[in-house]
Length: 239
Image 1 (cartoon, rainbow, N blue to C red):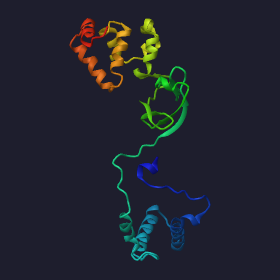
Image 2 (image 1 turned 45 degrees about the vertical axis):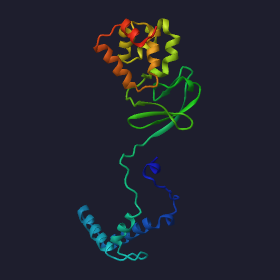
Image 3 (image 1 turned 90 degrees about the vertical axis):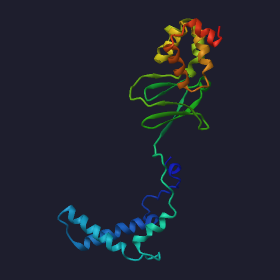
Image 4 (image 1 turned 135 degrees about the vertical axis):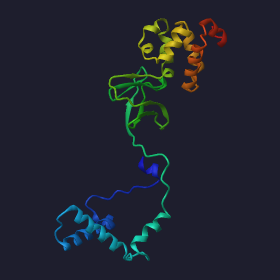
């Protein structure tokens, strides 16, 4: 993740092989040698001042391989540096989860819904401090959720539940899926759709490929205009 974000290649050194990082080891050896020569330091401030003066003196010397002073080497390296990405690096941890028969995964004591077509399959869950991404085998994002600090909670996306709602239409209002609906969808079902679940389902299907914000705007606009169930049926031309 870090390599991809900053466009670099990390090559770890083998443990206990100082010859693989000679510049670092030489700098450490040099500092230790000079510190021993100077004797005892009575305060941290005194030690820091000596190291600072020593660095300045060393940086004014010519590099043993480069045709320039040590202090100027960074200017040469700048030409090869890439610009820092505008977006900060976000660290993600990943794990594999299996989607249950009812189209959910369990992650860190919580339950999250995914598209029902992935039931029985394994998915990758990548999570940062704020976000959870669920990906399929090829790395495409199936869905995402804000990361919750609460435990033993169920999190659903309405599009993942359509088939379950259809199967439970007669008693949907008493189902666990109904309890997971956000407030605006309960208002859509109970007030605008007059608790007619089949009609509620048809409206959801008509918005299935639209941004969720568009559905929210649709619901709240109808509520503000006091649209009735009959008016909504006539407007959408749904039976």
